[in-house]
Length: 136
Length: 116
Image 1 (cartoon, rainbow over the protein chains, first blue to last red):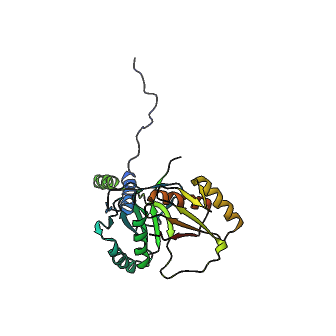
Image 2: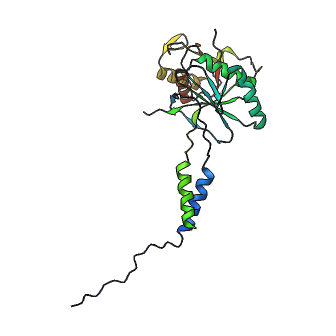
């Protein structure tokens, strides 16, 4: 006795549009990827609850301040009195610049205030104190 | 063609880091921008080296600070909160205080220079 197959329904996933989907994803990731990530100084960021996101990566400069009071901008160690020149050059290029101040949570305020005074001298007034989201 | 696209896709997936730039925004005053303010509109918050917070000559906890500032803001919307820190205060405490002020809805925050 021969059994006859009941259904002849095709169970294939249409793959014709797959390259299109892949290309779309590819374009999305290409556009959103920023290849260069600055690795500054080793530090632990402070935490806070009321946190804002920075608007755009292109208008942001990271200034790293370590526990010991070392300052690093764009992978280069900068002594505090020279911060104003570096920031001034940056603000001349892009007046919409926001500074993301990545300071260790144990940094004494003396260092932070000194760095802030340098920002003011360079007329870079928008500062964002980088912080992690506090849980709970 | 699809293989090449796949390869590129995997490459970008692996190298992409989602932006984690978050923090507390603050606009610094410009140099020489010193305004005369009515002393009634200023409230002072002092932070010492060990992280204790003094507001209106009273020792307050961070959550008390938030409620106090909130109440004061409800009475006077022109209120300026002046934050003064000790040079040895830790950054975390300062961020905590700013965080509480932002949560209380204070927009006018002034950063006083520490006395040395």
